[in-house]
Image 1 (tube, rainbow, N blue to C red):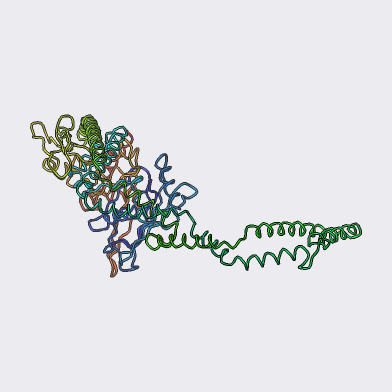
Image 2 (image 1 turned 90 degrees about the vertical axis):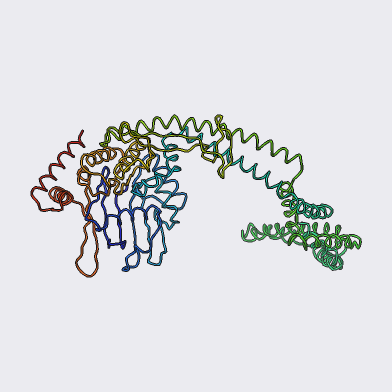
Length: 585
């Protein structure tokens, strides 16, 4: 859950901290006091778009900070992602989040003590928080959102089937698009392929080997300077062998070192230091012997070979001809040839390949149609369960005669998307299948079944939205739910039922509610009031926790606009008592 939220320099809020608790947190206040800024701050903290126009001129930046404490699989997933990105949860398992926005529009984010992209806050938010406001109600009116809501409700088995459909669809479209491109651009492809083949033929004739240019350069230098190299090696060998005037009886360097070693060893008993020097002389003698042998071998291989030198010159010239055309060095030429061979396979427009692609496309089309049909059947089964459960919740939200229907309809063919036969019907197919989903409301018996956007008033739409969220909560989802005035347009008994449902939802989730209804606020486990201070030259707002008498006064203000009215306070206390009794049930 979100344990604490601090907002600085955002809208009318100068600097305030919201201490939050598990269960139901309610935020109330006068119109214009800054309740919306609290929700805006939450949006910023979890990766929402920044609006520089909401940043206070002084101090010139808005900062939103929060402490998030999660449990179970959500905690494991979030902690793993943060650690992978270089952040670190605190020792107690909580995670610190921060978002800064300047008046110039620059934005920065910190997660787990490290600076990170704002998108990381969004990733955390998707796992931890779901925000629902009046804009979300409007989004729910879009067919794509209604289909997504049904897919979410259908469960992991349906999601797995949907993932398989999306993968098959992507493969099918890739093959179809590839085939169409090869046919449409056959002439250009053939021209490019001819040029690549010419280059490959030239490279194949030369047959360059990795690192060959460097090896030939070294060999050319040896052949060009063979006499100088031989003279140097011979002089060195003579010196090691005892000098230029040496005879068979003249001791070589190794023999002299051996004599010196034995002489020192004879006196090592008197002074151990001479023994250490003798050991070092033995190492030197071994090294000299090795160098002498290697010099002899070097001289044996060193030969001034004009024919070989001419061959090296010609080979280097052939390699330079390739490097002038295709790359900076021989290794680059070899890499170009590899890429050219791969590209040639991409450019293939032979009849055999085109026939093979056509067969693959037909096979994948059958697979996509089959998966789309199975997804459609799964949606229809989920639609019945979804409609029944939402209808039950609506009955508890003072809409006892209303009923939700979820229509799963074939997507009409003839639009921009391709057409396939799914379950015997020609439909337009997308990565999400061949269905259109429409939520319909029967407001009362005998009323026509109408789409939500036509059949629901503002208050009814708020209750439908809440009913859907309660149904979703039973199948998992983020642990923290935020409702921003989703009770707009609702009053009376319906308002009490909304408060009761939110309180029930708060038994398994942390719920944050921004509301103007006292019937809803009465059910809170913690009541926060946003108060506006109009003293001084600048208007600011702050947030405080209200309890006992202060809470009754706030409810009285919400009820009648008279926080000091004895009758209003008595009514508020009665409302609190009823809500407290309901929460204990």
